[in-house]
Image (cartoon, rainbow, N blue to C red):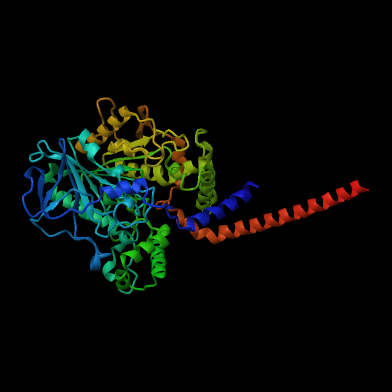
Length: 587
């Protein structure tokens, strides 16, 4: 019966994956009202303006807002907006200008599907989304040269944005006025990562599969050129991100275009494993063309914004990560950690229960259990006997405290394994490398220390996910100081906690939770078993399972029919026995 239930669950999961989830509401939700209330259009200032709130950049004079000693500048354009004929083109810098503009409001969120679980998607969206925000201390800004931290948001390269309160930088800079914080928007999904190079007129769009990454490069070029005016040191820039943001950071450290634009990198639960092959990306292109009923880039550029939004809703679940196209991103991006980026200091880590973040998305604990089993079977079905044994051995060494061993395999294969791979290669090549493992659990124990549970601590926003946790202010203060120290000097050690560099011998890892302690080679048995299993490019895109849908659905349908026939047979059998017993009693 367990097997039958498993296959039936597959049907349910596949059906739910294929359905379009619409927010059901009689009107705007409270979150939507809050996000819309934040919106405003930054205007050109014609007359006088407060010089104390103004900063002159190459592409204009931007007037910000003051909160105590904190200055904020929001919605600054860092490139020409990718609208009209510039849709699916590589971003180009804005021309130099002396125009005076407000910097009061966040820029438009990149086009994406709207969701009540994604605050940024409820903010006003637009293709003209290439903007950034700067937070800096007013005191001494004109003469300061502070370390700069550039935050790249996550969201699987299809969602989120800087308007999301979880990505704001105000509380962080208030607590740490010794740094300047920048957050950036970039193109997402079909407008940011759709490979059009195979189309008849696609030759001029041969980098379209990585436009979102190239947007980030253009933002970093703007920072390099202009951040000194905001009190930042253009020679001491740290790029930091979570999830797809961390994947972006790892890619930026691996590509030619971004070299020299930053000095340090912090990767929180993301890696170069979050990339897709050219073949996979071409499959998405075909789906988009079929859904839109077009054949050329010119046809795609004629689509209205409404039609673009409809495409996101129709084929968005088949999204792809940045493309290993061999031009922007190497076909083997891990190889760039063998010396190419050894001059970049790196801080890399993951959380203890990454996959538990998706429990709700899978429909609850039981469905999540089934989903991780499905994922495990999908991964291992193509492995040889030796690797299957490694997978089985991995499950056997998972601690009993872990409710779902298959989910722990997912954690290590998708997140921790790639993080270790990057760290050990970078360290071996002579790069300064530090490793952490976040194990501060949320209040609801089913989530544990899930994906993203560290972000509110790092950015000091106080906006925790999944109902939050029992906030640990000591942990928050120490982690933020570690990150600031790393951005300042390249070493995250604090007076309370010495943090040695990572190497393949000791594998020193800082365990960050209610207790902070250094551990050498944590979960060493899991690491040994995951090493032969870890494919170089394995991205956790659930829609990949839909490629196997006919096979799974066929088994599930056959099982369902067999079960139905069995139930019918049992029904008629018991009915016949009941009649016989009734007749016998009458006699």
